[in-house]
Image 1 (cartoon, one colour):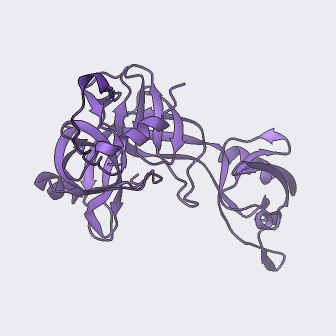
Image 2: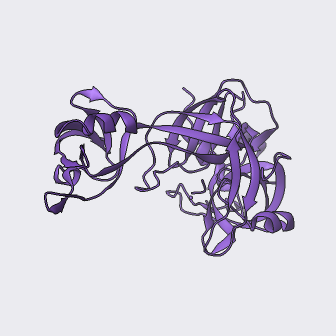
Length: 332
């Protein structure tokens, strides 16, 4: 990611009596339009084992964590029966004791592993690189109709090493200011440059999923209301991207949908987008990191969100249906 259905056929015409016609109404779903850049602060649900490494001790190389059956991507929940939520807390315990019993989670399975560390440079080491948080910037795709919740990115925040979607303990959206752009080019995705502006949290992040990042706001958002176009009504052709690329706020830029997925089982990368707007191409080179979640509008209706950029062509990228993101939102 960036910080990644067929049209209904015309039915044959039939002459029927009005008394035999059954009206079928389609529920119209509306949301508030996004396009705003925001900051992301996430704390993992357990300390993530990002990577393993061998340690030189007693005349040879060994990795105590690997020998205990621990793998990259595992979440460390507790040590010797005491919960650990941060890198610092984990390091403090492991460095003091030669042998420790760790409780870990791998997928849906919870298990224990006894790690016998090696003494190196005055402290015990288990041979693990760990991580407890992630941060970045992205774009809001939509706010709910009442403005109390939002969906963003169109993909999940993944651990930088394992590439697995981060299981979160807590998180918050934060205000950011865009201060520059690194243009994208073939083989090198660009990015929006921004910084956290401080101040109070804007709310809480509640879901980090393969289909998007979701959260609730401390104060309801008020913005433009748009209709969400059902998947089956989305078609190739002209669209607009709602994006924030500077301190002037959200603006609309021209693009084209080149492909709409006809695979009903596919949920991600269901759209292929081509940026055509001269100004956006001149300033960003196309799609850059930080634009994940940018709303895609077709005839003024929300059809999807930008999610990924093609590495060899920054003017093109993937998108996800807005309806898919909205269905994945848990407002409880």
